[in-house]
Length: 358
Ligand code: TRP
Image 1: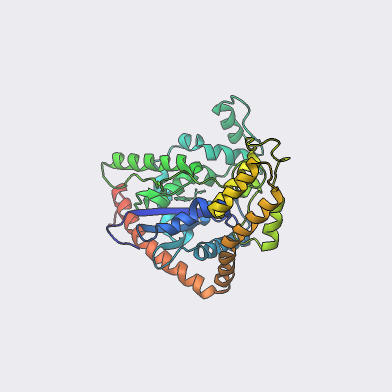
Image 2: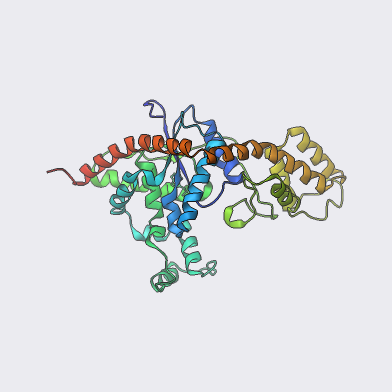
């Protein structure tokens, strides 16, 4: 809540699907833990989701389910400002203003833009040593039915606005978002120096301390991610969840005592470490070391321990989704609070830029 002496934290998540264990351990659980100590602002980035042109009904359904999942996992509207990005129209206006100081070149060089633009054009991974020039030609030459929309290009502007409009100083984000945060700092600096003001603070990554949490997928390699199709969702029914875990990729088992672990097995242990008691992890590690491990047992244990975490959340999600009035009141209140600071920032920004009342 807007308490003057607490540091301002902003973080958002795009509404593109249900939340998975990676979102939970990598973000949500940490958000829950800082609610008392920071002025927390957590939102659902439905405008960002529009950059990939979702089906309208799907977009609304996703926004709603992520909101319910946020609340079910412990984000508390009494402590944090929880809102929907599009409920704060000041964000859209500031996005227009900030874009006047953002270069299309720097946007085009953003890694996430390149990835997404390639996806939109269906041109796959970059050929080894490909120059930016070739990539730019592809984009400019794209025909009207295959195009890279301007919203995708200006995604970092919108994200910078989310952060700067609240004058946040700390932004919890994953590694893949650090480049966007760097751009946010650059835009803040640029605005300040262009107008000779000390207006926007430069936000930094929220450091939670400790080793970064690794949440691998079930397909043997890489992290859990929506686009990878290797996810366990918080709302997966027990039957579905157990089946997914039992089907996780493994290997033929340790062939000699104290063998090194293959990646798929190390990944299962990473998940077990996040969800099980230390003594359980230790006993499976010992079983691996002396070759007595049975992966089926490991998976059964893992599935039950994951369920112990997700079941209460899944049940609360169902209750919350059924209570339309509650959901509406949460977002109404969140928008009101988010707009307080947003409208102040915007009107000062307009004034600084020379848009002034007669
Ligand atoms: N781009 C972020 C992601 O995909 C989501 C996001 C939008 C965000 N606006 C933000 C995160 C502002 C932190 C702060 O994960």
